Amino acid sequence: MLTLRCWQNGGGDLKQRKKGLWRRVVWAIHHNSRAWNDIPVKVSVAGPWKNMYSIWQPFLVANIDLKSAFSVAVGDGKNTCFWLDSWVESIPLYLKFPELFNEEAVKDCLVQDRWSSSDLGLGSAGTRSELGPTAANQLQQLQLSLSNRVGYVGADCWKWRYDDSGVFNVADIKCILSSINRTRPINVFEWNNWVPKKVGIVAWRAEMEKLPTKCALASRNVPVLNQMCVLCGDYAETCDHIFVSCCFAQLIWQILAGWCRIPPIFAFGIKDLLTLHASSSGSRSKRKVIHAVILVAFWSIWKSRNDAIFRQVVPNVTRSIDEIKSLAYLWVKNRSKVVALTWEDWNRFNLDLTWEDWNRFNLDAML
Image 1 (cartoon, rainbow, N blue to C red):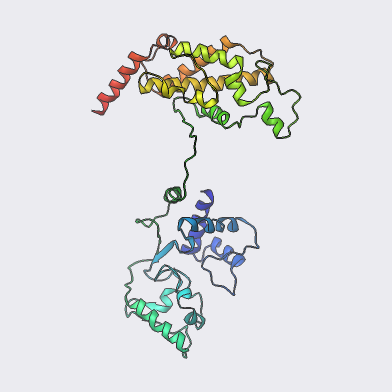
Image 2: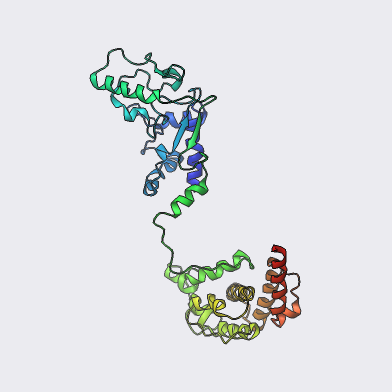
């Protein structure tokens, strides 16, 4: 999308400010005198303009042709090329009337030089007096097309074809692209806005086995002297082991299950832990709290692992549980904006009354 934003700005300069410095630089470098593309590019010349132009081909899959995506509402005709710009139809006139264009003496002439909305005529100052039969026939067709057009008052105005307002924005392109050949992934990670993004990222990467564990580093040819888990020392360190099968993590999950008043946790994979809240009893808000606690536990376990490796801190279950409870309380209380949530209720996980009052307050506010 950054490339598309640059294309919007760069392509807009080519269309709207034909005397601008950016347009003259691109035209001088990429224009081919033997071709008349309105947006020129030389694939042999590397640089930002080539990268910006390269998105044209993939967009054709979504039926978006950036070459004809902009059209112009002609006013005074001072900023629109008669043959090279799309103003009569969706394609430039030089493509629709090639024989007549060959007879044109000034290829980059402006609309004001060739067409007048007052007499609906086609000027002949730049065309040869004697035309061949094909060119003469195309001239008649062109005059017929122009006779049905009415000029606007004011300056020429460029418009984006794929939006009714005529204004280009990246959000519309994203909406169009999202509806083309979009496949929903099998596993969709559920984010929780009651904890910081950095906390959710740890669980998100762990589910994909993308954390830099010892086994993951070794698979990338990073020299690792000892691949055993630093928390238990019994098995090789992988994401599944650290967060699921490690005795350190299992003890944390069982303590949290007792604190959150849910059945004992028996997980066979990381996904079982991340979807545990969905099958829990209670209100929607309480399930979201449980989900937040689980994400904080992921973050705390990974932090304990890093502390043990890089700071030689001995892992301690009690310290990790206290950290999970305190950090989860601060984040949930402040991010959910539940002022009535006290540390005493949180420490006993007595949230039913608190969340019922909060939900009732929100319902009264909506009414």
